[in-house]
Amino acid sequence: MDGTPEPQPHDWGPFGRPLFNDASSRALSRVGVVDVGSNSVRLMVFDGAARSPAYFYNEKIMCALGAGMSKTGMLNPEGRMRALAAMRRFRHLADGMGISPLTAVATAAVREATDGPEFRAEVESETGIQLWVIDGEEEARLSAQGVLLGWPGSYGLVCDMGGSSMELAEISGGRVGRRISAQIGPLKLSGMKGGKKGRKAFIKQTLSDMAGHMGPQKNRLFLVGGSWRAFARIDMERRGYPLHVLHEYRMSPAAIRETAKYIADSDPDALRARASVSSSRMALVPLAAEVLKQVVKTFHPRDIAISSYGIREGMLYEQMPQQLRDRDPLIESCTYAEAKDARLPGFGRTLYTFIRPLFKSAPDHRRRIVKAACLLHDVSWRAHPDYRAEDCFDNATRANLGGLKHSERVFLGLALLHRYSNKRANARFAPLVSLIDEASLHQAEVLGKAMRFGAMLWPQKDASPGELRWFPKKKHLELRLTPEVEPLFGEVAQTRFQSLAATLDAQSRVIVPLTAGPFCGLTGTGAPPPSSAAPARIFTARSRPPAAPVAAPAPRACGAG
Image 1 (cartoon, rainbow, N blue to C red):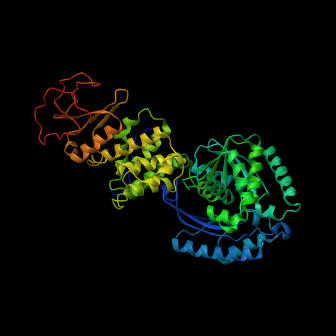
Image 2 (tube, one colour):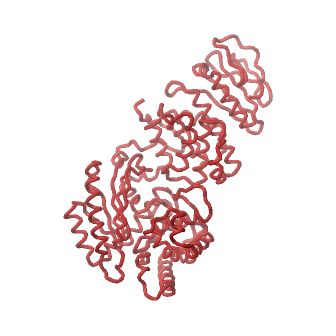
Image 3 (cartoon, rainbow, N blue to C red):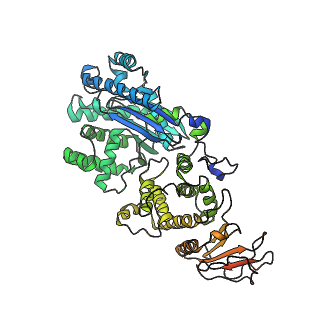
């Protein structure tokens, strides 16, 4: 019980053994990176399971280094002072956290400014931080790697909008392909001659040139960067979307056009207040919207997804061995959470094996969420019992987890809610529940109640709690308990098993062997013929078996559970 699951040769079948505690992963357990952009300077410290890191510390200073560069060719003097002060602070924070040296990169503003080399030397002289100035293609590659950190194996076009530039990168099969950068950021566009007409012509021509380099890109469009996230917040506000999580938020090309018009027709101050967008960011959003409309018009993506992961996450991804890159970020994160917070780390694997027969026909993407739920089923045990179910739902739907669609967040949240509660009589959940269909809603309830029951059969470490058998066509649920676990099948456990059977609308049977050896057969609807291989006690979920073994009567069918 040291908090570290023991390696098993066949832990999760196709899922593989978690790697978060391997030496190569532990080296990345706390990593600090600094991104000196055209609009902001940010320190981010990653912590936890390296494949799906938590944000241990995150601080952003809006310095606007690139403001006015289109006229002067130099960094904004006020922004330069603020950026240098931020770097001093970040250095001291890193020393206090024990994460020095920081990995720091500078992008378009420092790259293009005539005084960029001077600023870089000043940063190193005053803070000791080596500032790597990367070119546009490298910026595109790192941003695309950030997307791959959240979506392993994804494919499509990554579009990263910064203050001064915009980068495009092609991803496919977990690799970054063609990429290109152009000076088409909102800080560049704001000072352009010719007004809106001239700006529109410039955007159209620039994107046409970029498309010529990138070739056809009609798959998913991944949007990276603060301006795109602000646009997505406004789209959520316009639609009345209930789950305010930006990562994996989806928009259609039609929604992009409607929201761009909504922005143009709205009062900026009132809109930013409704959508919770900062004033400095809101000033750039109308220009970013003009670019986004043309991006969609040029590349015709089938759908659009927001990625909260970008260049900073790409810098972490850069340090990962390939074996770690290939892992599922959701499963790694949940395994880490179980090892850190559960009362019996490793029982999630046992629970998954126990309830898996209920989901034997489920596709891989659904079994993946079932596994995640089993890993997380006990990590909130410290919460107050009156609020534990709600806390589980809130944590699952709003947690910083990669590799989860919004509908999957809701499914996971509902399953964990039902792990602690039979009912979900809370009006505030209703809007979020609308994000999944009725079949998924029912399956989440089944999963939650199966975990709620399975958690009662908490045996010694690595001992089997028994076996569930599910015959969906005949609506027959069968529980076969081992002699070691039978004493755990008390009144509360029986009630929870009954609740699971009722949710499945199933007839239930419970079988307990009296001696070692095979289980005896059953008679009755949907049951195999009797067998004399070993005596057993057979009872309904409502009854409690005798405490001491007795000679078993002839096998008989049991009532509905």
